[in-house]
Length: 588
Ligand SMILES: [Zn+2]
Image 1 (spheres, rainbow, N blue to C red):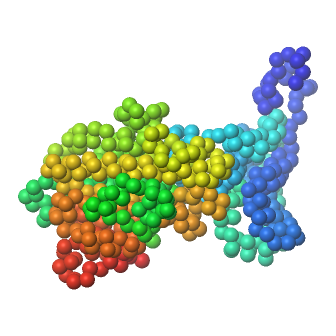
Image 2 (cartoon, rainbow, N blue to C red):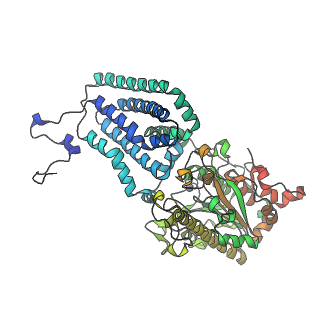
């Protein structure tokens, strides 16, 4: 840039500048050039991860060339048709910029974390909060945004489009759409054989086509969620009442349901991980009142799917993994007359706690545990007795179900999940660009977050045990993680892979249950029996029914076959000398 230049408008603002000399007005870009130039750019540079992936699949250079040419033609045609639809005053520049930014954003996350963009992933992104976004911001993101979107954005905004009056413009746009569709059809026909087998064998590729994946996901999210949001939720367990154990009870039951975040079974000490990430839980297990369930599958691979599904009366295959159209477990517990409280240390309860009392840990920051709007999980235990005392006294006298929604092992900033003094595995990865860290440091950071969950659960159990020993309640705890995490296996990081394609690490989750002697007696559940059957297959499908059973809530919504504790309860044992394994109760 020349030093002698006087003040000048940045080029991208030039179209709003009043020209000093009307004859010097900047020439306008022909719409066809803008449409096809951007379509080509998006199909090529905007899809670098896709082309790298296809290159890595192997095959002869000729085969790869034919595939890339076919898929490239298909994408250019589809993008050209889409962009042609958008050639309108005040629309094109904004919409085309949004597509460029989406492609750049997706490219970054595909490169960094191996994620693909499908409707559940997008819906999850739309539910993300500021802290989660801050965790993902990095210099690498800015670099990729500049690489993929910088040049075309500059080119696009430096000139207006040479638009015509409405009539001729409609005709021209229609012609553009037609040309795009024609190109798409020709490219598909020409490369059909290779493309068809590619899509059959590598289903994830269809979620890699930028930015069409985001446009498709956006349309699906709107189509799926809008009709459900205008309809009231279907009631569940309208007949719910408290069972016989509540008649003249000495102490009310208090159940803590801890919903973990991003903890995978593979790195959970109790599940046989070579490294002891859960030494404190192991002590509780050795004392005999805690059982570890080793074969538990999550309902989804992200919070937005799993969280409502855990509380849903529907199994995953019945639609528990879809946007809820039913009330949930908390509604039923509350309707039966119990006190319910949800404490959140994350980006909210995804609608699950809307109709019950709920609080955010960050609303009352605990010194030493909270900073900058974010808290360590132990902050949820601060002042818990007071929180419980503040619940409706009539309900509280019957019994309490308390949900603690953890921050857990939320990535990629695993190093933020545990305070400095509670990190047994060092050195740890402190970068959020996970592929930059040596693998063992990444695993250290993740394992530290699991060890902190061990610490947090230990503190919760100590609190529950103290209350039980004081004689104030019959206490119990169920912990289950919402989904797992990939730590670089097959080039994947984080989670959110479409369920059918998801690796074991994202769906195999830890789960434990602890019952005080009082609650064991009250519910008739035998810990010895549970221990014996702790390796039977279970899933999030079981939580709804298991909690209803443990809390002795009587309703037709309680499906005995999905109650994981029922086969080990006194009632079941009285009916059979050989108790059925917990997992034999699984419903298909
Ligand atoms: Zn989650």
